[in-house]
Image 1 (cartoon, rainbow, N blue to C red):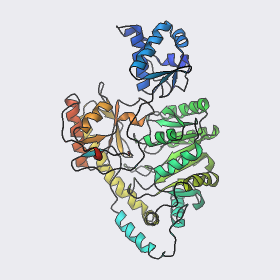
Image 2 (spheres, rainbow, N blue to C red):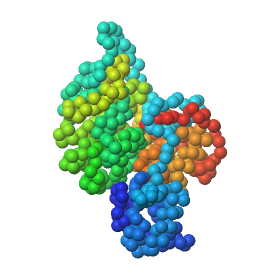
Image 3 (cartoon, one colour):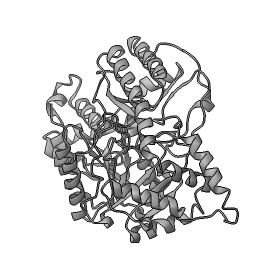
Image 4 (cartoon, rainbow, N blue to C red):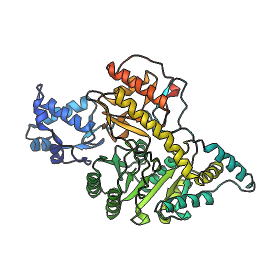
Length: 493
């Protein structure tokens, strides 16, 4: 079988597509050559090798390169159209149809009902240190009665605390490089809204955080997915270099520390090479550090992405949502003053100020941040170990990389099991999950399933038991408990 190809750019050439097609597999289809070609094209779309919105080569040109008749290619394209995989646009060509999804990743998470196992979101419960921090913040706020309560860029004490946090990690930072936002998603939205315009391209890891994909698309941008293999970071750097040369992107979005969904960490040597490569191509890198501090095996800090390159090369976003609580709406943007001023202008159109109570609470939490991180790591380590043990014991054929941090297992499913089918059946059994395809830009990753380990070990055991029942019964095992429609979350993290 042909090796996994590099991601094909928009309007990909017939030669590049032909190199990705396994003609041996095409010829094996006993029904007809065009059905074999259609099946192979469908496979490339599902695996993400051909991106959503990609324009397929002209029938005549692809036929010539493949050495088949134009009728064969035309019939294969017709088969894709009939199955909703492609669409023809008069005068423009044949395009891959983007995969639709009715549940956005932005919005407000709704609470679930008793008895429903909510595993859509990789979000931990509130830290035990949150309550005392709120009490201390309330006492501090009692002395600020004359303050109007609006601080557009963030409370000075908090910006200074965040700057010290980065400086201690090896990325010298001053308070004027920090903008406080209402969470990391708010920060990311402000950055993308500032720098991405209609038609601009943004490089992304593949798989990646779906919220970032949605934000880029919302402003008219286009994501260019670059496959990342935790076992082969050097190839990822090379592929990012190639994509930057081919696509002229304005930004690159990365989660180099405990990425969502895989938990992968980009090694120091690789991140240095990648930072330098993107800077050489004049691509600003947006570094999402929402999970950077979720180290579960006592690993030492990895140098922050972008430390060796000028500040203008990278914009970092972070928050306390994973280490403390998603309900504490405090995030930030770290950037050089010129870039930060642009982001602050964009953000001011959406938000007058972040809650003073939340900001004062964040100041208290940064004062004992080592204890905050230790407490969260202990909780997540228990969940991770429970999830790995349960999957290994109850779901034979499921494979995963052991994550050294983060919030979830990223599992590869056995042949013949699709995440979309599994998620739909699990919902009828009272278990809510996000389909693997939501972590890609098109039809990729339907053979993968994310299992958050941010819930309790007991809940994780219950969730895996439901999955084991479904897989053992051929996916459809009948109802366990109906799920109220208002229990389905609108946002996924």
